[in-house]
Length: 332
Image 1 (tube, helix red, strand yellow):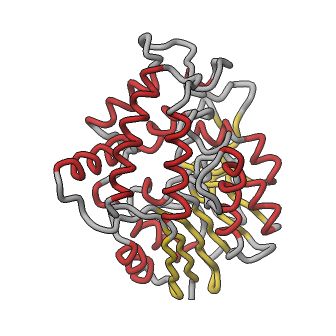
Image 2 (cartoon, one colour):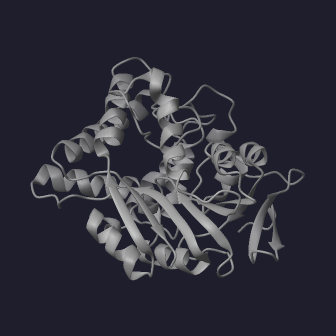
C-alpha cells in the first residue's frame, strides 16, 4: 500500500487495519476518474478511440495478470461506466421486468436488499468487495448494524466511495477477501454482492468467513457460476475472453454445486443456493444491448469493445453456460 496516500489505523476491537484517506496528501484516483468530463471520456486519451492509460494497463493485464487483476479491471471501468445498470452501482440487478431504464436502479437496490435481508440486525457486518460504496447506505438502513465494515482490495474505490461510506457510517478497510484483516469470531454477518468470482480463491474466502464469523453468524452473497463447460470454438473463445477481460482465474469457473460444496467443506452449514439468472443476467443483457443500439457519450472504441464482449456474454447465457446465484450459509 502507498504510505504517502493513506493512513492505516489499527482497530483493536476487530483486529483490523482501517483505510483512512488523507486529503492533505491526496488520494491517487486513476487519471480518467479525475477529469470531470462526460461519462466514459478521458482527460488524456491514448488515441482517438478514447482509450486511457487505465484501459491500456487493463489490456496488458489480459496477457499477463498481476497479483491484483481485479484492481486493473475496475480502474478501467471507473466510477462512471456507461454500461453500469445505474450510476454508482456495479451489480447487474435483480429484476421484476424485462430490463428497462426505468427499473434499473431499483433492480440494483433490490439485489442488495435481498441479500441484506438474510443478515442479523444490529450486529457487526462485513461488506466484502463493496464496489463504489453505493450499496453501503442501503445495507446500513436495512440492517442497522452496530458496526459496518467495507472491505475492498481496490484502494481507489474506497477513496472514490468515501462520501457514501461516511453516509453509511461504514469503516473502509483495504484488504483481500482471501485473507480478511479481521480477528477471529468478531463478525455477525458477511455480505458480498457479485464479487466472489474476482477473489483469488473461493475456498480461502469461505474459510475466512468461517474464521471471522461468530457461531450463528450469516454469510449472504451472490455469484456467477458456470452450468457447463464450453465445447464449441465460439463458446471456448467467449469463455476465455471473459476470463481475461475481467481478470478471472480459470479455477474460479465453478458450478453452483461446486461453490456450495466448497462452502460446506470450509465448515459453513445450512448452505442454500438459489439460481436466478433469468432475473439478473437476461434483463441486464437486454438493457445493455438497448443502450448500445443508441448513440452514447462513450468513445467509439469503447462502444465497439463493449458490443463484442456483450455478444460473447449473450452467447454464454443463451447456451446455458453461465448463470447467477444467491447463496446463504451460517457458521455453526
